[in-house]
Image: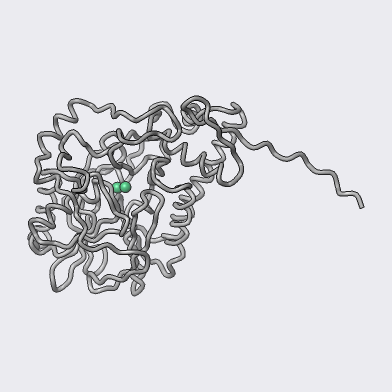
Length: 370
Ligand SMILES: [Zn+2]
Ligand SMILES: [Zn+2]
C-alpha cells in the first residue's frame, strides 16, 4: 500500500520553506496521519507558531526540541495561530499561552470541548475524536477528528454515538495526558474573514474556509502568494466532511471555501497542516472538487440501484468495508444532504432513521402545442 505524504512519521528536521517561515513536524499517530506541520513564523519579536500539535507530553517534547533546533525557546513564542478546532492543531495552544504568555489566535467561531464553560472535568475520558477515526478508502483518508461525539445525536439515525474506545489506547493516553497537557486553548484574539495580521514580516489575510470545520481558517500573504492552508487543502488526501457540523450543507460550504482559496489571486505556495508544501494550489482545489463530484456520482448510482434506503446502507456503497462506521456514515450523510439540497434526492424518516431516494427524472415533455 502506498504511504502518503500525510502518513509519514514526523521528521525531526526544521526546514525553511520560505523566508522567515520554518516547517517543524510534530508526531501524531492517527489513521492516515503521521505528523502535523507546525509552522514557525519568525520576526524580531520571536515566533508565531501555527498549529502546535496534539495535547500531550510527546508532542510538547517534540515542539521544544524543534524550537531548540531552530535556535528558539518556548518563551520566544509570542503567538499561537490555530487553523481550526481539531486537537492535532490546537493541542499545544493552552500550554503555550500559559507558559510562554503567548496570544492565541483563532477564528471567531472557534470552540472546542475543552472550553472552560463546558465544565472543569474534561479529563482523559474525553478523548479527541481523532483517536477514533478510521481510514476510509484509498482516495479519501479523512484528516479528521472532532469533538465529544457521544453527545451528538446522529441526525441520520442510529441514536447517539458511543465511542468504541480501544482500552489499551485509552490507558496509554491517560498516562500521557495530565492536566498540564489538556489546557483549553482559550483564544485571546479571534479573527474573521479579511482581517489582516502581521507575522514573519508579512501581512496575512484571514480567509474563512468552513467545510472541514465551521471555524477553519487559512491565511494568505498577498505579497508573495503563500497560503497557510491548514486541513482545508492538503496535498494528497481530502479532509473529512462531517455531517455532524452545524450548517445545512457542509459540502457546499466546503466547495465554496475551495473556490475562495483558488480565487485568492497569485498563489505561489501552500503550506498545509499535513504533508509537504505544494505549488499548484488552484489545481489542487479543483482536484478535490472533482474527487467529491465522483463521490456524489457514486452515491447517485448506488441510490438508483438500490432504491430508497438509509444512510448506513448507502455508506457501504461509498466506502470500503474496513472503513464502515460512524465516520463513513457522517461523510455519506453530508453528501446525501448536498444532493437533497440540490433537489436531486428526497429524504424521509422511517422510525429513527433517515431514508434517501433519488427524485425521479421528469419524463421528457411533449413539445408544447401552439
Ligand atoms: Zn482537522
Ligand atoms: Zn489535521
